[in-house]
Image (cartoon, rainbow, N blue to C red; front, side, top):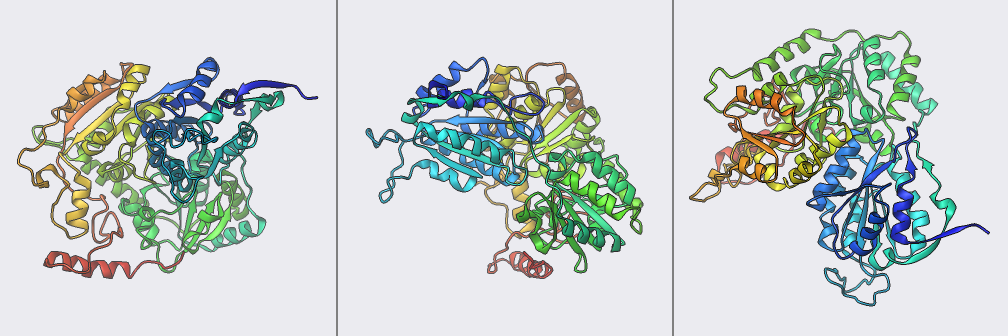
Length: 618
């Protein structure tokens, strides 16, 4: 007869999570972020307290931003480790929907333990319970189903015997990786059960490396050997596969330029001679010219989002598209020739298969020209009394940074600007742009610093995104997690204002404070606000002061927030240009077919011409 141990369901969950290990001997789930309320305080809260010495609990200020911190941690760990987050029934759990969607889109592991209704239904309806008049099995947590890679409702303690391993199996699967949600009925959390002792034996989770199918490998190798001007599009899968060095060797040996997505940027250092910079809407002239002229485009670990493909207009009509990805769904996009495999394994196998093949050559001068243009955009302003552009702010941060710095961001103008202009060392870039979620930045900066404590984390955030979610500054102060926030203040949503007025032919409306039909413009003291949460906060009058403050921030053990006023000015590469020109590329944002304004009608005519070049392949 097997031995058992009597625990509540919540206690069993924490005990089990505490012994799920990586091959390196670390906990795979490195603790749980928690805000307690009814629905998780009595069961999960008590269990976390009981196991606090072996399974850490992290307290945050908002369920969404706690999850953002957990996601950034997993991204910073290249998906080799993850964190969990728990929330109470009702608004606590529905606050997690946005973060779950972010993790789902970006293929990042996150364990969500959401408080749920009573399985026994005796006290129904409980406080905050969402009732479906026609379905007694529904709760608010149904909102999490479409944004979870795995979803389960725990209505009996023994459900955890299968649900927990299934959740981690998804999170550690390179193809299906994403958020796993366990909706945990609050009465079940507190129920006792006799658990098999072997359930709590330590388990090591290995992340598999799928090898390519022989036929697919032969087909792709043949396409490469027949190509004269191939280009590689490096996505986040290169980094998660830890294939950075293999990619560098493959590109160098075979003479194939590498362009990068937001998730793939810094897989190669910008200084690497085969790194041609950003691809697509927010792409460099060198990258987009190389891609548009390629006869073979090789996507590696990318889901080929619209910003990467110029909304399906960037790749030439005669180019063949190959997609190397762990999931067949992603590998088959845009009618690509699929190679379903781990990025590192696939590149190694392809290099062997194509032997001494080298491309017919690439335009190294175009790369050098583009980098010189970057220097111009990012140069120190001659007039330090004038507000700098975002590009000039990036230049200042670049000059003050070392190769140990990681630039991170998520939404607004800065993602496109950083992708275009930031020149990272390998691993020096962290961008959440699959979901482009405003409010990710501050919490994400904290989570990234937890993942990579030996790196300098520089969080770029605009005033609009800062206003959406900033409270985890207080958590970082409390936990003594030092990172630097560069808060660029242009008094509104400058990025969307440009899209509205330049990209779509509209008029300035409801984005900048000045265009909001109000008499008194907000005068927000961001320095005082960040300082009130305990951060070291300062206003930089110009880029010279910004550089000095960035250097000073390295000596602190708390977050530093540096505020600088910027001008909401367009510059090449923001993705709002209507033609490729020497930078950027088309982005499909639908334009109204009917308007009383000639500017809008003219924009629609050009829009119709542009979408005529889109590929119709799925």
